[in-house]
Image 1 (cartoon, rainbow, N blue to C red):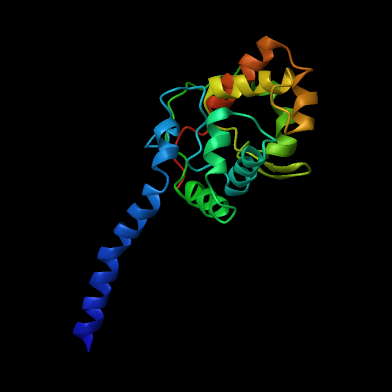
Image 2: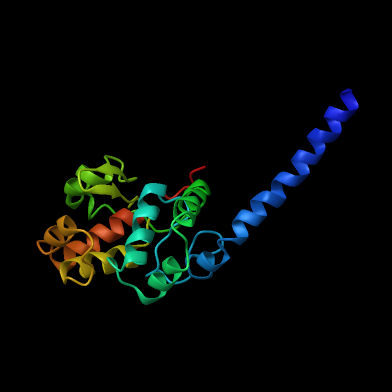
Length: 190
């Protein structure tokens, strides 16, 4: 009897990596832009690996409905079924945040106090009064800056609070905030 349980245990252990690889294969299209190891080669593309599942799900739904516009992401989200979206979001979130190499900057530290009300005291994201807020700590600076500008200029209209807030922040401050946030939490999370 012990031998049977041993064999079953070995088989289950052997099959587990196959199941994980199969799930990862469903994300291959994502990684072509967002980076196989979680780091996009284009810094204007966000790190999504390890991002909050509720935020990823909300954004995929916004892309799918057209509430958030990006030609590539709109097409990608439209190809997902309503059932696929939460599953894919949970899988992406479960992979953990990658190690980033942005230098730590202190110039924007005093400018992010207002961000903490929605994005959390540690800027790792969380539930907020206006819906799920993404992790900002360790995100690509170029992506963060481009999104702040998009909100300010009305090119990104799926979050009214962010639109209003970003209109009040000058370009130099946006750059400092993005650099500061990119330098936070540069070690991987499990």
